[in-house]
Image (cartoon, rainbow, N blue to C red):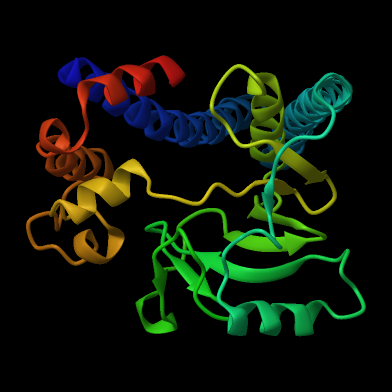
Length: 280
């Protein structure tokens, strides 16, 4: 079961990387095709006319691709909105971590409340999650997470993720940095899995800024368990690792995953792996 789970996990990661690689290949292919078209026209026509026709064709293709992208975004947006209405009406009030019930240290709570004074309904960032899943407390240490100082903080490679407080809710805010498609995909998929899988509930989606707000679930992750057992898989441990230096991204991911995989049998019970596979 462990080997099967490992294979599934690695396959998923490799698929994600290959997907972005294929996009780059597609762009290069379009550029190459454009050069070939210009070269062919240049043999038949005046260079100025060949360039003009190439620009017209390129503009037409670009307009078609842009229109297709906009239509796809429109459909994804509509599906997510309809699904959100359906989930909200069927589930009613969903449970989120309560700010007032969360066992935060008194000094931290007082500092947060001072920042919220007079505007309890607005969001206040109380923690920043780094690339290794650790948290930089803005007002002090937070319970249920590994808190670090600013010197040890590793900026996230892709989307910034923060812990925020809105009204009485402790939430995770994910900033997709304008990646509309990625934002809509996660928003839609989380709504689709509500009540079916162990995924955080969606609190709010800011479509203009591509910010997704979802329930904060304190506690250890699988990565935390493996790291505590001695697996050197964090960014701070692998970025300057001589053993991994020079490896292509895919090979590096597999090498780091192998470190964690070796400790899975001793750290994670079989029943947990079965449940995790079911959730995946």
